[in-house]
Amino acid sequence: GQNIDQPTEMTATEGAIVQINCTYQTSGFNGLFWYQQHAGEAPTFLSYNVLDGLEEKGRFSSFLSRSKGYSYLLLKELQMKDSASYLCAVLPFSGGYQKVTFGIGTKLQVIP
Amino acid sequence: SAVISQKPSRDICQRGTSLTIQCQVDSQVTMMFWYRQQPGQSLTLIATANQGSEATYESGFVIDKFPISRPNLTFSTLTVSNMSPEDSSIYLCSVLLQGKAYEQYFGPGTRLTVT
Image (cartoon, rainbow over all chains, first blue to last red; front, side, top):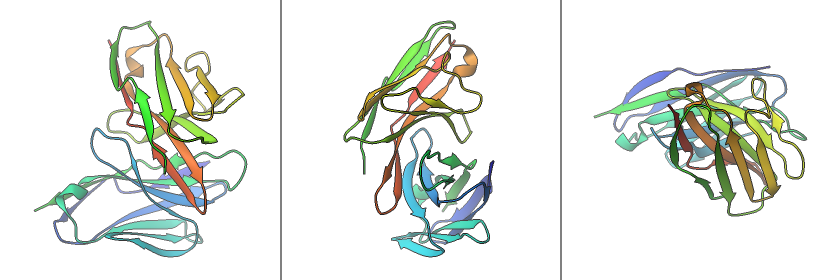
């Protein structure tokens, strides 16, 4: 089965840096997604990590360690509009039947 | 990327009735899914919509309750049958694209309230 853990809530200050962690235990692993979801809206794709290491996309970076079953999303220069839920999700298989499994999501509140 | 539209965006339905949700994608995609998201919760996969064959349902979801059609590679429908208040949720259509890496996109969702 799949087990994905992330903190339920975090608070950070505008202009600061925040790291949202995600740990997973899955039967088979292909890669890990991060999504942003504002209240009342659909999730928006942020990143997909397959290989170990850090991938940077502007203010957002995502890190993966396959051996440790660990990932984090790093948000720099936080803005008020970054207040949202951040969902970690795992793609367990690399071929055949594909199914993305989601964590519960981390609700990030950015304060002035 | 992919642009996904869903209809209706929201509906209020009476107990015992059925609602069909439509999902349209702007390009042909192989992998299409239906999710449910209840208030304050994460996403739960209902089923994978397979083109040309029966959908693959996840544990806890059955075809009689959530029949799915996938007549082609750009369109799918999900029906919520014999609704009860417990079916009140947001229903999301999603596609998984495989290129150099995977990318997953979601439709705007259908907010269903059952009274």
